[in-house]
Length: 245
Image (tube, rainbow, N blue to C red; front, top):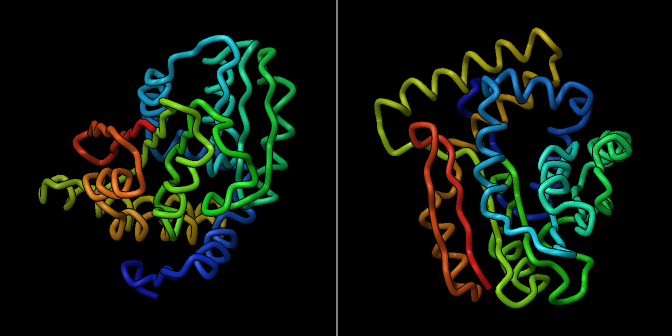
C-alpha cells in the first residue's frame, strides 16, 4: 500500500470505527512516542492552549478526544483544586491508561473520564466553562456536530479551544514536512510495532486532508459561536483556534 493513498472514511460512524482501530494497541507507548516524534514540541503546543484558560474557583473543563490524558491532566493542574475536568474519548484502551495515571496526576482537582463521542455529548446544557481538544480535532468526521455539541454544553461566555496539526501553507515547509510525516515517522514507528507504523501513516494522511484552520473558524461561527481567533505555530504545522459562546 502506498503511504499517500490511505482511504480515511468520511462518514461519522465509519470514521469513528476506523479511528478506534487506529488507536488500539498503541496506548502504552503513546505518551513517550508523541514526545519523541514531535521533538518534545507537543508540550510547547499544550502550554499555548493552557495559556488561554483563565482559571477561577470551580472552573469546569471538558477535554475531548483525551486519549491517555496528557491535556486533561495539564488542564487539571491549571484549574487547581477547586476545578472539575472531564476527559472524554472513544477508545477503552486509551481511557484505561488515563484512569491508571489519574491518581498521580490529579493534584487535588476532580477528574473524571467518560467513554463517548464528541458528536453526541452525554452532558446537560451549560455545564462547562471550556471545551478543549489536543492534537485530535482531525479525528472527528463531523466537526460541525462537535462544534454544535460543544456550544450546547458550554456556559455563557464559555470557550472552545483546539490545538492541532495542519497542512502548512508554505510549499517549501510542506515539502519537508510531508517527507517527515509520510516516510520518516512511519519508518520509526515500524521499529516499535506494525500497528504503530499504521497509526503514523494515518497521522500523515489525516494532516494532508485536514480542514484548514480558517475554515474551522468559519464553521464555529456558523453553529453560533460569536468570536474566533487563530494562531499558527512551528512554521505553520500546528494551529491553535478558539471560539467564544
